[in-house]
Length: 255
Image (cartoon, rainbow, N blue to C red; front, side, top):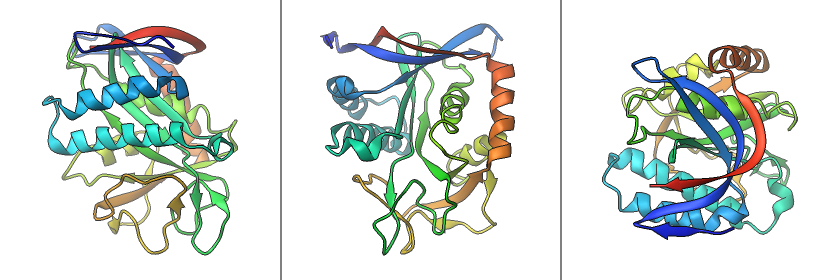
């Protein structure tokens, strides 16, 4: 892959997997592209990480999540035992030439007191349950009213679950005092697992096979989306955002 950096711009050939129609506050038609990161993108991601690290465009909490997401993607791409990572999804949302969202899912875990590979860190998770490990979005500078970034990432991810043999999706949502994540997930079919808040990691949590960049001291709201809810969400997003699923490469420049 040819990588060009001019005036701190990062250009690379990205694997385009889908296009989603969205809008801004003026209800203009907008397009969000979803790309899939691959090993050839490591250098570009490292430059993106450096760019985010020195950026002042995000609050410290959001910046930490973006940085942790990029580090997780790099950890997956650099992991030597590729056979264990065949189902991992590494997606980026791109508006025009700006990356404005990241999603990481299906990172394999090891159940406590067992060497069995599973995909959800939840204790006693269901047989076909997986986990959306990281999801973060931010407004592109060129359109700070853009809607649908998170929906397009989740829609792309949900569309892959059946082929990977998954049924339900577990997620650790941020507290409503911190962000609107819980309400976002509820709008996409997730439900709270009880009324109690929980520690991000407990003694019974299954452990990731790669390095985990989460803050174990965080308190979260555990949520689950079941097969029927996921199917309803996919149909809803297809109606609202009319996605076009693709498999080709295109050049983007991160400004």
